[in-house]
Length: 110
Image (cartoon, rainbow, N blue to C red; front, side, top):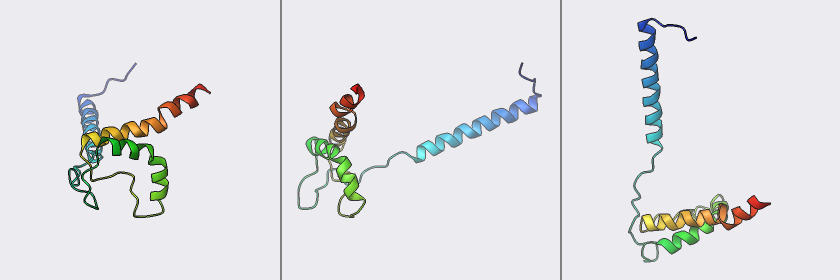
């Protein structure tokens, strides 16, 4: 049986819960991604923004690109000069093909 707290103890517990919830909300909001200033801008070399198919390809080569990016500043794992949501969709599908698609299903069977 839960002890009966005086009214002052209940208020303190409720205030602590509210403060903790607001703190958690602020912490989660701080992790949100910001806008991409490179959206719909030309890439180096005058090429237009990268679209769905480039996102798909770059998502599939992510493991190799990540490893190379650890040792050089000229390789990035994400192209910031993209057309927005369609590049992101292709990128996520490409990643899922490598880590959770046919290759992941094959590993899960064994």
